[in-house]
Figure 1 (tube, each protein chain N blue to C red):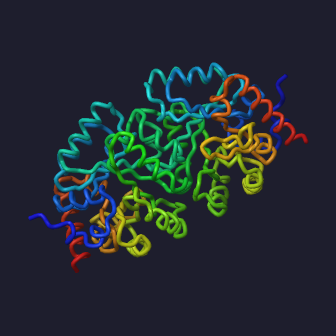
Figure 2: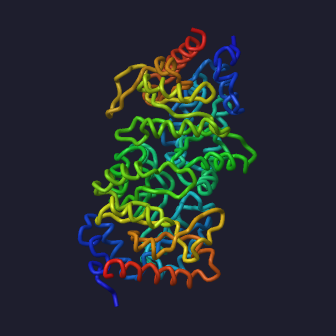
Figure 3: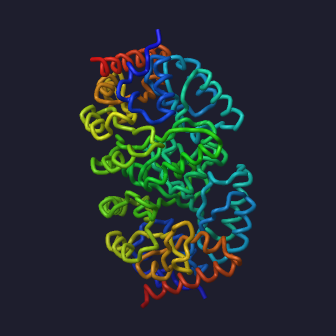
Length: 269
Length: 269
């Protein structure tokens, strides 16, 4: 049985001013999943296999198109078709960070990100014009999309301190082209504070979560996905927890169930 | 007659700890130019024509590889050969802004930036690891390169305030992999302050200059290139002032002479 988005998402649905956000929330309800897969494979075949394995249990696919070693326009178009057939939003994690005019053009070119991405990440460092520029790029090909602004990062010595975060959020949440913000899923307390300043309308998506908390290799710290959702995350971005698992399908199911139940608990608890 | 780098560059040469910076300063002396051309053309042919026209009068070529609509591996390799024959450093203005591991891989892939770039731009937003990651990427193909960190920008509402700038410079100037910083050439006072905190060792390169000061279209403010050099810029990055000129060759000569004379005046004045 499919639940109504308004009952699942509460404020996030009723105050929503973005068609792409409503689309995403609807897809999440259809799939009972708020898991975005960080598809960190560097071949078209590897990416296609991942969609086959876990497509039914995730709501969005996060890509780095410039990390695909055997990329071709045709091969990528096929992969995007496969993602759409699996009812996934495609989220290119490009971290745009140039001035407006250049950014608009960077959405075109060989990779033509504007033609297949539903969501992209951007830093707000160059100022608010980057959001309009990205929206113009989608408009150039008659499409619509949403921008996720980096509000927090987890990397060592990053410069997204609370003042920086507040500046990004205060300005970004007033912009229609902003779908939401990227927060740090490994620290629920900071995530709660982020939700406070973001308010009810915009999405917060969070990497840095793993069901095996503290199990990070290479010095990464992970947080519990359910805690992240309760603290205000609307989607957990999961990479190695799914695609490096012995059984990616089973792992994706577990992440989907855990995060979905946390979302229901948050909005009806 | 070719001048000795030590007499032209003063402190910048004698305190230099970077092989790529010494290489650049030597090239500049050979060409009597500290002009980096912002080669904002979106075809291989257009870029090749620019090098033919102004190659002798510039010291570096700033590219956006992802804006070249007819990019092919072979065509790009030819263009890079042409740039090297013209004794130019190749500077890819990619504005890397991801975490270290992703950044290292972004230097590879289809565009394989690590294999042909001598310099790249990066934001310091994700923390200091991005510099090591970029250096590792060049190392992966047995090459060396230099990172220019964004310390100032000129875009409306950008978040590189004086505190941010200071954090970037204080940390960046201690890192061997950092070639220098991007400053704002349109504001000599702010550039003087930037030089104060950067100190004598690292480069400052500046866009935002035009010999026809105040002539900017599309709301851009330009500064005088000589004032920028006197205030501490080591290279002026010039785009439309050269490539949109009726006579690009003549314009490049003028920019080269003006900025070179300002450099000699600064260090011997």
